Amino acid sequence: MKNVFIIGSKGIPAKYGGYETFVEYLTARKINKDIKYHVACLAKDNNEFEHNGARCFNVKVPNIGAAKAVYYDIYALKSIIKYVKENDIKDAIVLILACRIGIVFRKYVRKLHALGVEVIVNPDGHEWKRSKWPWIIKKYWKYSERRMIKYTDRIICDSVNIEKYIHEEYGKYNPKTSFVAYGSDVVELKKNTELFKSWAEKFDLKSDEYYLVVGRFVPENNYEMMIKGYMASNTKKPLVLITNVEKNKFYERLLKSTQFDKDPRVKFVGTVYDQALLQEIRYNAFAYIHGHSVGGTNPSLLEGLACTDLSMLFDVSFNREVGGDTALYFDSAESFTKLIEDSEKLSKEEIAKYAKASSQRIKDNYSWESICSKYEERFYE
Image 1 (cartoon, rainbow, N blue to C red):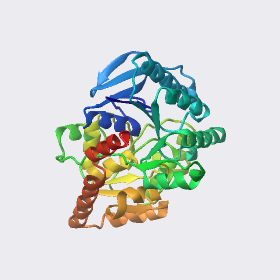
Image 2: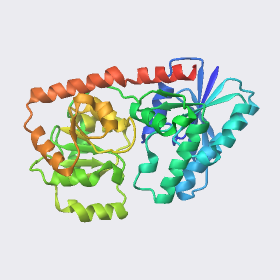
Image 3: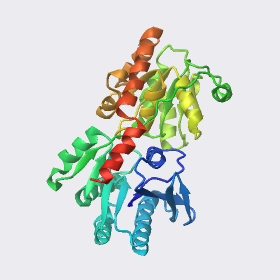
Image 4: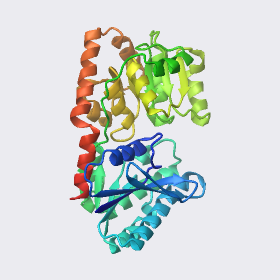
């Protein structure tokens, strides 16, 4: 039995977030019966439970702000080391999601190696580039990334461009990398189900008559660019933003620079944690808009390509890598305005071609069955 311990996500059952969704599917779609998953879950206690056949162990950490995630990973590693010792486990891997614990990483790698445990890191995207962090936190993220790339046994990158970056930036460490993307399902849905209509009526929305944005409410997701570009267009289709709006400095700056509150077409509708409903909201949209500028294979981008007829993506290498020629691209507020107006001139046949091509791209390259199989292969390398 190969024991695979996963830390770095908030845990499963998944509610929201890329890493949580990834762990949910990795455990639910397990192929090899000789793999036993152990998943760390951020919680208010230290209990254990089972989900998707995985042993889920809660990790309680103090509420200490931005450092909470670092302590969470460290406490999870301590729990794993204790569990491996007490149960005399001989064949184990620790998969760490994100590069948060560089400051203590070498110490814990040595402890795990002493127990015969291999360490794999999935570095995610360029966390040190995110504008939400003050400069000192950005500096720590970069330092932590370097330390974890240097001392880990192997690295699994969710993007070809991230893998390329690892080798260009940290080539002197001879990193052992492989590429495995995130996944998505292409599900046959029906338009205007009762579930969708019940939600849509609250915001005066109609099927195929709105643009959709789904993502965290952070500057690097280009909300200002998208809202300005949208407001300058002559479309009558509302812009629906599903995000965790926090009335912070970014919100105040965005409100001042765009004055979106004066345009009734712009609709911030809060978050949607019901995955079935969120899938239907994507499916009923006229177009999905992806403004993310930092990261690798973004889960919300995969879902957009899988579910929505048209996808409009911010033009960076990560998004091009995923969308290819099955999506439309913008790189400024002005080009986004033009993209909106041009898209509404497309015929139903042209839109159907984009829908078919993007769904096929997901099936060919990002199916969860394929992604889970590749991860299991990596565990046995």
